Each structure stands twice: as structure tokens, then as C-alpha cells.
Amino acid sequence: MSIRFLHTADLQIGKPFRQFPTDLASKLRDARFETLKRSASLARDHRVDAVFVAGDCFDEIAVDDATLRRFMVALELFDGMWVLLPGNHDPAVTESPWSGLRRLSLPASVSIADEPTPLSIRGKAVVLPAPLCRRREATDLTQWFDTAATEDRFIRIGLAHGSVRELLPEGSGAPNPIARDRAERARLDYLALGDWHGRLQVSERTWYSGTPEPDRFPSNEPGYVLEVAIENPGALPLVEEIPIGRHRWIDQRVELTPGDRDQICEDVRRAVGVPITNWRTSSYVCDYRAPSIWLRIWPWMTFSTISERASSISKTTTPV
Figure 1 (tube, rainbow, N blue to C red):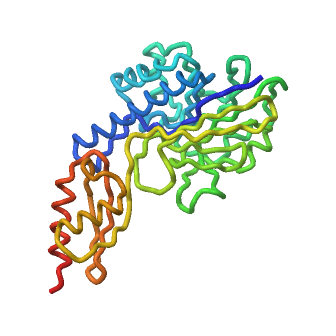
Figure 2: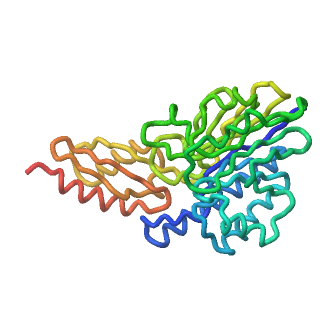
Figure 3: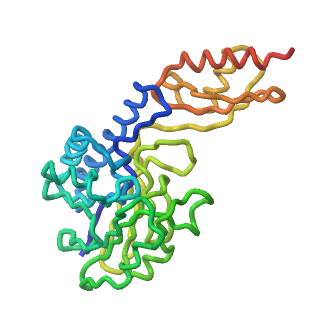
């Protein structure tokens, strides 16, 4: 009995992006909804059995009804099963996005996995969720997977949000530890993880999907969803990494050729490797002895700004 599903996480719906001007922050928030819609459409078109969201559907506990309704509209593009796990940004506290969604009459196809209780998936699989009920937990909430009884005919899938501390880069992990070998200990066919915003394979049965819409600059391969197929209980999962994000966030050092503004613009154009018309820099660092800039580029602004910055750099790097 086979199953096919999408694994995603860290949607961070409602993320405020306070470091940006109001209009740009709004565009970034909108992009997260649009990426959720594309994920739902992908699930529909690929006829998967379910979509599993491994925590942090929402960026904050306080979410207004308009945002919740917009979230529900996006989910409607896929009428199969959705399993939503509370994470550290949206834990299952008394007043939360989850209580708000229930108050707004969530469709029957959407399951909020806010209890550590097995969930049946179309008579093919059982999902073992490890929901967070507060932002920080010192213990491994996936421990109960080890002793959870399921029928041998069902594929076993774990769903959790936290840090495999031995594996993630130093300083990247919050609390909420998860044992690196949990899938093996608990006889899971697949362990779907969230919290690390980049796509990462932990083992042959354990993956972080990463956030589907990039929201920062680390080079950890965000912007994907994972399509997972498991042929039968005990079979290794087949994982396809599907790009889904709208924006690319580029953080790149560019060596500059001495010259005027046009020459510097050409250096930037060549380094970025994409048409520059819809891009601009937000910041740069100039090295006076070996002219270079460090670009942080968002893909929705205009080329005029990069030209203005290049003009400034040209003046700064002109030999005295």
C-alpha cells in the first residue's frame, strides 16, 4: 500500500518583516501566501494523498481573522488532507491561530495535529505528531514515537519541529531537541521535520523540508517543498526536491573592476548572473584597498538603485 505526500514547514504566514519599509514588507508577506497557493496547486496537480506541514504555519501566536481566512482560502486549492503541526512560533496554547481556525469552521480535510495522538491518512499510513505547546521544550517530544503502536500494514510517518543539534550548524538550533536516530528507533518510514529553514537530509528516512519561501540570507537552500513517495511499510522513501519559492535572496561578494558607474554595474550584472532589471542592492561594503562590494539583493526592486549605489562606489573607490 503506497502513499505520496508533500512535506513542507516554516510557512511563517504573517511574518512582519519589520526591517523593511512598509510597502516592501507587505510584498514579502503576500509572497508567503502565494507560495502556499502554489504548494496547494502542486499537491492537487500531482494528486498526492496529503500535505504535511511540520510546524510554524504562522509566524506569531496572535493572528487576526483576515489572515486566518486568507490562509484557509489558500488551503482550498488542494481538497485532500492537510496535517498542520504547531511549532515554536505558533505553539498550541489556549489562544492561538489554531483556536482561531477552529472558531472559523476549519474544513474537515484539515487536521490540526495539536495532540500527540496517531492520525490515520486515507487508510494507508499513520502520522505520529510531536506538537509544541510552548516555544521551548528541554525534552525530546518525539520520544513517544518509539512505543506508539500501529498496525503493520500502515506506513509510519513522524511529524516534528525542532533541532537535530548534532547535525545543524553551530548556533542554528533553538531548544526542542530531536534525536538524530529517531526514525530508526521508532521504526518510522519517514520523519518530516521543520524548524531549520533550509532543505536538509538528516538520514535516508529523515528530512528538513526548509521554508518554501526564503525569508533571509543564509545559504541553506530554502525555497523547496519535498514530494515523498513510499511504496509500502519498510520501503525507503523516494524524495523529490521541488523548487517552489518566489524570491531569491542573494548575499554575494563582488570584485569590482576600476572604472565608472557603468563598469561597476556590469561587474554586478555578471556576478549575479540574472537580468538586473528587477533587482537592486540593499547594502554594500566597500574595501578601499581591493575594491569590492558585498551585495544583499532582493528581487522586486528597480535597477535604478543599483546604479545609484554603483555611482557612489565609483566615487569612493577612485584612487586619490
